[in-house]
Image (cartoon, rainbow, N blue to C red; front, top):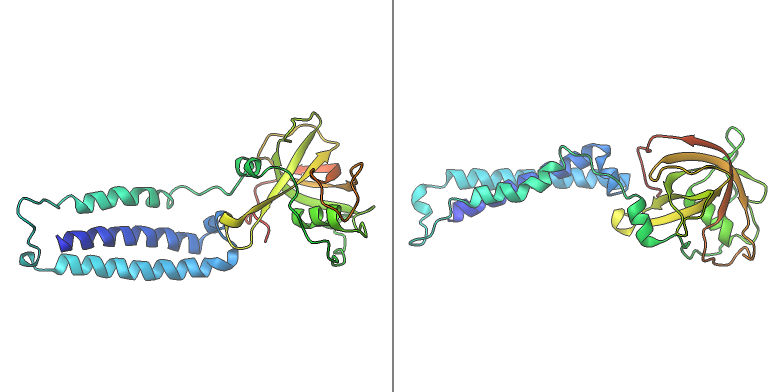
Length: 246
């Protein structure tokens, strides 16, 4: 019985190891964690593979007389059960996981997260007539920068389309998740895009445009609504290799 248990454990360890190694070696991990954690995933996978292989080797080399089952007990199905438990893990080797999208963003809502109104760094130099900003930086400056550093500045943002909560005609939300460690702590940042036609949900876009203050919002204070962006150039793009902001 002990050998059969060790075989089941070895199979599961090898399945987990295979998934960890794959995530550590490919961009598939970026649907779950930030790039800096990939070496840890790879190292963990290698360690688990060694443990799983050792367990299987020890189980299959054990003399038959060392595994006397209790009378009437049958445990020959243990490796089969282990393979059944391992199948969901092994599917990750064949199916690329998708990063968080519009469904997860809708569960968080479009209300901007509270951010510190501390001083903001100087804006980067423009590239091809627009300043590249993360959505998190744009939201922070648009809402909480009392110096209104975005005023009159043409910016370039990248994100995916999510519908507005009120299904307003003529606008949509541009969304992107920011993570500190992994998808478990991801936070959605959104802006409301004006000046463009409706776009299919989940479409990734590169948008250039300018900030427009919302009526009634005082810069430097929290808001119940996402900031606005008046778009003047919209380019559909493929999902970035790194779908999250860090």
